[in-house]
Length: 468
Image 1: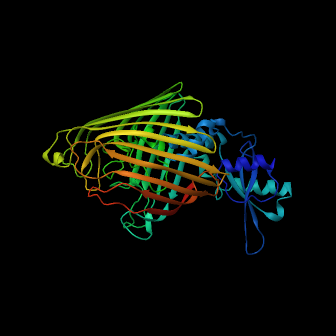
Image 2 (image 1 turned 90 degrees about the horizontal axis):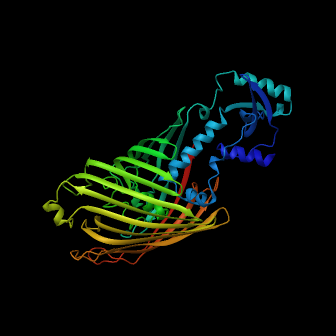
Image 3 (image 1 turned 135 degrees about the vertical axis):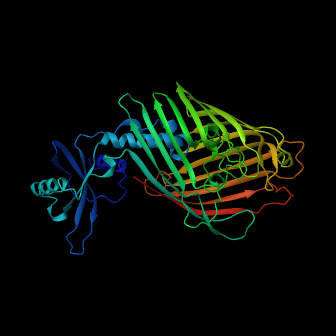
C-alpha cells in the first residue's frame, strides 16, 4: 500500500519526504475523495500540521505515461524536440485523468481521529482560502530549467560563469469533444545577467524566444505553425545530448544561430505537417519569404525540409532528413563569404537504445550552410557520436565526438572540427536526469581557419527543473 501511494504521489510531482500518517476519506460536492499525506508543516508552537492532497478515491493513473521500453530511455534523455512535446502532452493528459486535486492541512495531533479529520477536511474544502490546486483547473505545464555552469572555452583560460541554456515556459493542452487536440507552447531563455554568455551552441540566438507555436492533432496527424523544433532536427537531434559541448557537425545550428532562419534547428515562421503510419514517422516543413541570418544581405525566398524516421526494429530507430533553402539572389557579398548557391543540408542517423546504455550516431552533408570561425562558408561532411552508459539510477557516463571536414575545393582555409567529448553526470530528485550536476570535457584536435590549434575546454554545472 505504501509503495503504491508513493508511486501515485511521485506521478503528481511530490518530491519531499512523506509523513508516516494514515490516509483518510472525505465527501465533497457529492464526490468521495481520498486524502494522501504530502508533507509536514513545522510550527514554532510545536503544533505541527500535516498537509494532504485529496483526489478522486478510485483514481487510476493512465498507461499513457508508461512509454514503451524502446522509447522510454530516449525520451528521458531528450528533453526537447518532438519527444518533449509528446511528454508534455502525456503529463497533462494524466493530470486531467486524475481530476481535481485539493489541499487540506490537519493538526498532527488529530490525524489519528477519523471523525475529527473528516470534519476539518470538509470545513477546509468548503473554504475558498484553500481552494483547488491549479492542476485541476488549467490543463497546462509550467516549467523553468535553471542551468548555471562554470566553464572555460577553447580560447580562454580559467573557469567563468556561463549561462548553460536556462529556459522557462508553458505548454498548454486541450482536447475537444471530437478528439482534436490543441497544443501551444511558449519557451524563452532565462538569463540572470545580460553579460553572461552562452556556451552551448544550440542555445545561441538573437532573441530570448526559443519556441512559440500552436498545433492541432487528430489521430496520428498534426499541423503546426510558429517557431518550433524543425523537421531536420528530428534526426539531427539524435546526438544532441551533451551538457555543454557538441551539436557542431549535424547542421542543425549553423552560422552561430539556433537554426531558426535556415529552418534546421528551432525553425522560425514555419508550417509543419506530420503523420505517423505504423512504424513510420514523417514530417514536412515550409518557410516562406523570411529573413536570412546575420551576415547575409539577402532574404530567403523559401525553405522546405522533411524527415522520415523508422521505428519498426527492436531497440533501433533510424532516420533521414533534408533541408533546402532558396535565397532571393546570390549577391557579391555572399560570394565573398563563400556562398555560391542555395543552402542545402542532409543528415542520416541511427539510435540503438537499451535501458542502461545507448549508441547514437549520425552523418551529415551540407552546402552553403556551415561557416568557420571567421564567418567564411564551406561545404562539409560531418559526423557525431553520443554514447551513454548509466551506472545504477544516479550516475551516467557519456562520450563521443564531433567531426566536420570541409569538402569544398574553393575553400582555402584550415578550419575543421575534430573533437572528443566526455561527460560525467549525477542525477538527484526523481532521478530522470532533469535535475543533475555534471562535469564535461571537450578535447579538440581540429584547427581554426588560420591554422591555430584549440585548447581543452571544461564545464562544471547544474541543471534543476521546476515544474507543475
